[in-house]
Length: 149
Image (cartoon, rainbow, N blue to C red; front, side, top):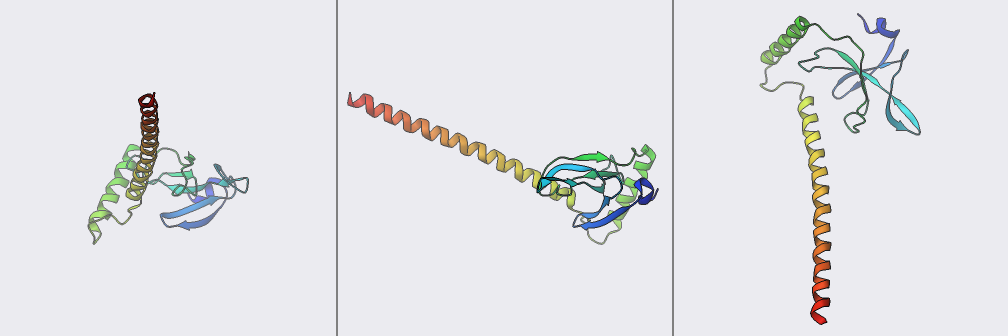
């Protein structure tokens, strides 16, 4: 099935992580807004072991914003199709001259998510430290008050 047979035509744009396509005939919109208008989702390709080569609609800003918009374009692939594609992915990695996979994007996304979780945890700890500091200060004031009476 060609890209044009899905909905009548696509404009293409490239991103650092790979190729993305816009669906000009049947655009989907994610929840991100610029100037009060929802952004048009782009078509990307999944390379996970469970859905290799399967296309989906996603937010064009998924690396910088986590709006979570996601909608499958293709039907699920057969189990045999998954096996063949995953074997080809492994062969490509083994044949490459470097020991590391050429596409490090999934690892970068995992690291980004980990950093965001650490930032959230850090802000929660800062709130708790402020609360304990305020409680300690209040206890000193009360102690001084009752010591003077």
